[in-house]
Length: 140
Image (cartoon, rainbow, N blue to C red; front, side):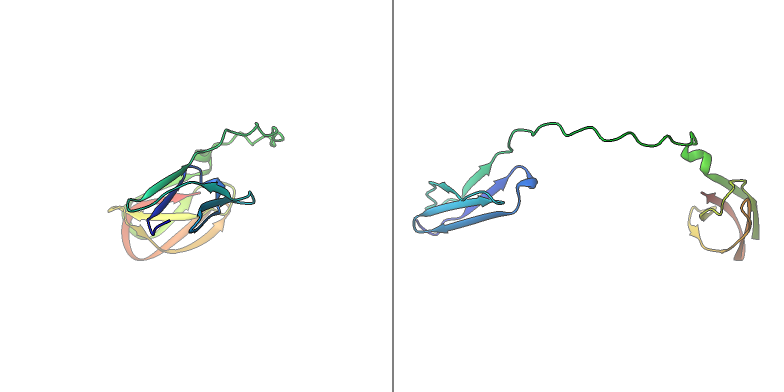
């Protein structure tokens, strides 16, 4: 066997790792724990491509257990959007979500802005900024 190029194409990445072994007698490919598969390939000058096809699909797995019922609330029901129309350095937000939420603030140019958040209660918070501006707070 000469010093040609061998290209191995695996159609399913789940068969990795792949080992290619070669010497004067030929080339063998080993996939995972299976035995090497001898190949008769002559690679004189041009590259040789070996395609290992995807195997047949396996059997259907067993059905998983039923999950617990949800609360019926949608994600949008847990998100509150607050609009600060007049520029202000102190925003007071009454969201009535019943918990201490995460807050993202965006100015009128849609740039994210950071401020100091104080949770006054599980339904109200204040955000203090270094300068007055108007924008939107997404609270969830």
